[in-house]
Amino acid sequence: MSKLLDYIRLSFFACGLLLGVQIPAFVSNFGQALNAHLVEANTAIAPFKKDAAQYFNNDLSKLIKHYQNLGDDIVGKGGNHINTLFKRQQNLQQAVNEFTQSPYLFTLSSDLTNIKQQVWLHFEGQIILKEDSITAAIIAAILIAMLAELCGFLLLVGFKRGYKKLLKIKE
Image (cartoon, rainbow, N blue to C red; front, side, top):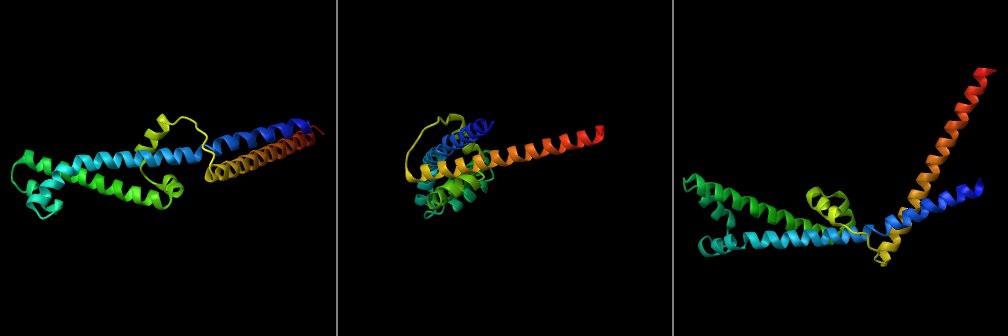
């Protein structure tokens, strides 16, 4: 029985290693997706920035207000769309800057769930053996092995208590 438990522990440790080595690859893919979305946002807002440079001394907010204040509903909605594009571009630029400073923390804590889901849907397991992936793999393996050990211990204690109560009731 002891050997079986050792194999189970080793299996959990190995699964933790395999899971942990994927973390840097996911973070890298998330960073690439952020950059791709930023490039797309920059491309979408570029013509309006060019107009703002030409007519409003590089002030895109003045161009947006101009569109919104023309009195035409269609042009006003266009101004709202430009404003949405501009805010998206600014948010993505800020996200890329924060990601560059601390990729793991930003990936874990960011609220860009739509981009995370997109990355997760297209994520294929890959092993990148760099220092951070080895570190993440070892940490994940130890945590998963400890969690499995704790769950096993709690389950065993629960069974022992239940068995003891069962024996006391029958006596």
